[in-house]
Image (cartoon, rainbow, N blue to C red; front, side):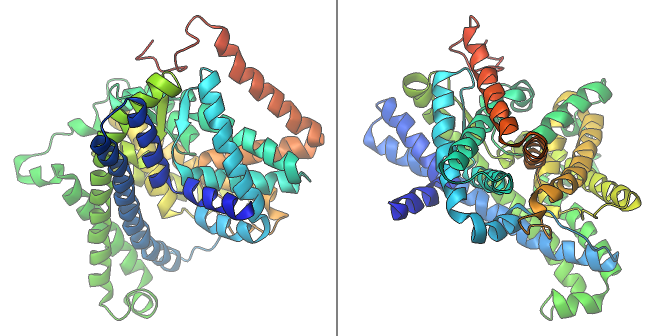
Length: 456
């Protein structure tokens, strides 16, 4: 039984397989011919694997940049990293995490089927990270066994359906009406960025409307502009770190400045691969998902990874990344001045989350929205991990922590309520969540996904 559970959790941890299974179910529900089921199933799988390869290229080339910045500017502290904290937690909470993950997926499907929160969360690795966070926090609050699994699974499944719904009106603005939702647990940062953009960006033109002189028209090519921007980042950091440090620790004998330029160029290639993978996912997943929406979960909406939104505003991706990183740096200095633990800006969360925050800020407030909204997101990525650390500290995770905003909000909220009110407080959270899920069913549009305003 345990081996079967491990097999299922291994499958559900892989968004590529999850998307392929969903696409296959949808195509079968639409009674498509076998060859279309085959190609429509493989398309999202291959597209997501392409996206993952691109993300790995980006991540592997951000790691040396992070080391250059830490050494060059003499910064020490905690670097939030979801993968790192999850790997540490698995030694203590492996079975609990896997069990909560499976329970969460089941609860998500049930909630999507029987409530107006008809959002099916397809980003499996983020579900895994959230399951790990929940097992850590609930374990620290003395929950164990079946109660931990059911409570953690319910919270995971509920947030998987609720978080895309909260900001769906912003997401539809980003996608210009394409019916996908945000399936990434830094969603609160994105929605806050869109809200900030709506306040500060009135009259500001979109980042995508930036007029470039003919002599600089090559910058409109996303891959080229990304390469130029990142080469500058790497070279400045390389100068600060010094050639000797890079040669000894990072470049494996390659000239440190050539190494830095190559890292910037490879980063741009990774972004290009991500874009290609996203196009492949959307080409097959959205039509196939109509089968899910028509036959199995009426009016269901697919909630997908944040990188899927990058092609909608490529310029905002770079603007958002830079603005979020600056916000993270300022947040770090504020924490230092207040005597708190330094949260060193992790370039991976600031790239993926900052870029997406820039896209959302741009959708409501143009260039000003992208800059200021992503900057606010960067501040969140500094302060929320700092607040989360004490919640995880008892379990020995104090050297690392979760990086994205939803993890911080959910972890801090549950941890503080549990510490103040014990198990009663957590059960109260469950009851309030149930009420929140059920109330919209009594509206006249009970069969339509909540906040999917283009449909309504």
